[in-house]
Image 1 (cartoon, chains in turn green, yellow):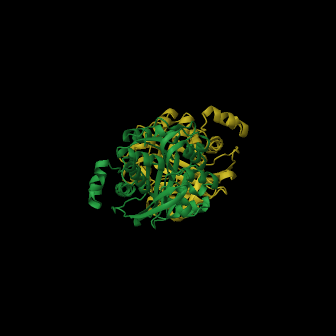
Image 2 (tube, chains in turn cyan, purple; image 1 turned 90 degrees about the horizontal axis):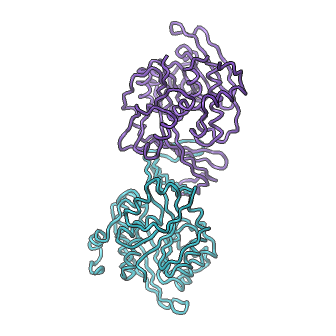
Image 3 (cartoon, rainbow over the protein chains, first blue to last red; image 1 turned 120 degrees about the horizontal axis):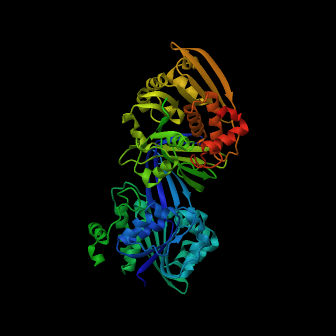
Length: 307
Length: 307
């Protein structure tokens, strides 16, 4: 298997606004704190893989402000290969405006920007892709152009249609989803969970603080002949900001997977990597190296796993 | 009278988001269009005065992103003197997030950023200041440190306290306010409109598309002995975005005032300048030169006014 991971999806700017109260229509509300962070699911995963020492390239549409804002420099410093980025002229990066009030309510406004062009783009052939949410038509083409497919349907799932989603699932080798997303995947694809197990070798359902559940499905002739379900515990951390936890979990999983570790160990590596990211605000602020991950792994799981 | 105008208040970044529907708490809504513009009342006024050929300096608190975003370059290109800016370390520019839905409802989130430090700053002595809303304590000190004071209480009036507002009004020579603001000024200061006329030589009440009303008050021994009320008509334009109209009206007024024109003519110049600004999105996108203003003035008012 290739050692390089291609990651597709959003590269965006996150504006995190904290307010006392949300403002209604035709009203205004003062912002107590306002922070601008580099984010976007694909870029977060690529950055985390690079920090862990993995070989990774980002296949993401970006606009003029990608370099103006210095985002290219940050990703290059992490070690992400940007040579296959889609530079969309006269467009800006996608942007997420995330407003959180004193009662922890969160309202999000998401601007697709350059990413709105995804559906029109032709993906290259790659050996190993991880697709982080974004456009279903692009992902359907990408899934067919890759030898090995990891898929995170994520927040854009609400826009997914049945046909492209089924094309993606038929080509998927690893599926990541939280409890709400897995339900929605089944609704849109009109497939039962057992039918998903007949198609996809590894399914990981993440459950926030309750950890994650790994399904290892042995498939023969389009049928799951044996499925092993394993509960993976969360590595608890002093959480300051949960944003980016999911992305970094997948980055940890995939880096370990390409190193040849068993899926259960990959999930545990994912949990450890996520525990770093939630300790600081921003999705790319506190990414661990492989050695830092390993040191914390040892405090929660048998270190012999990684030998 | 000095030929240089010092302008105090906000220098900020405006994020204009257009959405189909506002998102409620714990929901998200896609953004149809997202534009980032240079704005802030003080910077808008200073830019417009500079474009009209006036001599102007900006006394405004700015953060690290002021030069990172190229805002300094734009204002310098307009000809604004930035030598007395307050550069606040480890702070960012103030930011306005203005969300407009398909039904023309508008929700604004305003982040003070570097401007939150205004109350602590000591203003310099200046001959002629135009104060655009912002902090009432800073403005009270500024009003006392200037020989001639023009004041626009604007959107921050909601945060104004009685004592500093009265200190400002006692030192104000020109007061600009819309119909809602003038009411609020009277409420907070506990002064009637007649009492304001006893203190302030020129009061201009703007009424959006209904034009503006100029009160020229002759004051002797702290009493208005004669007040002339003049209705000024709006110069109608193909309005694309009303943001910045008020700021540019004041810039037009003040530039003409320093050239020695009568207040009525200054108001008419203000109306003409505003008619340019609303034709394009952004507050500093379509600022006219004095000659451009003059050409349009001639289509609406006697050009002999400006000779």
